[in-house]
Length: 116
Ligand code: HEC
Image (cartoon, rainbow, N blue to C red):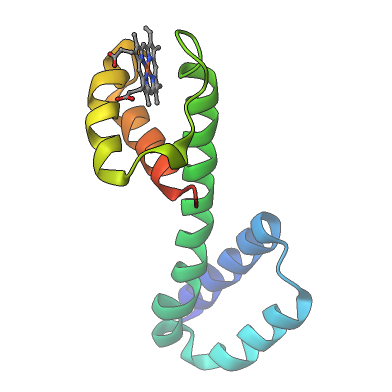
């Protein structure tokens, strides 16, 4: 129990740094979770954490895209192709841009995330 609370505390500190969550929310979170830290944690905290991780991955994909995809031609418009088209384009372009499988995935996730 002590360990779980400690763990939960660290997560809050982590979230404060990364997302700048207002003090209100944190206090509310502590009150809401309280002694139910164990049952509450898997639902609320990791959801916020994975959102942060997602945003970071999209930002990484954007950076790779902007740095790797304008060497041979203008930087393509992500909204000019459908997500299905992007699968084929990325299969053709990732080797040209010498992307790793991970970078390929990050760039793909980024381009299809851009809203028209
Ligand atoms: C080594 C050079 C090179 C790099 C790097 C490169 N491309 Fe291309 N790209 C090309 C060439 C050549 C064409 C046109 C001929 C073709 O389709 O193969 C093209 C065409 C395209 C097209 C148009 C395809 C179509 O069907 O209209 C898109 C979109 C595109 N590239 C996206 C990208 C993206 C995204 C990246 C980064 C991951 C990238 N390219 C990196 C050489 C490159």
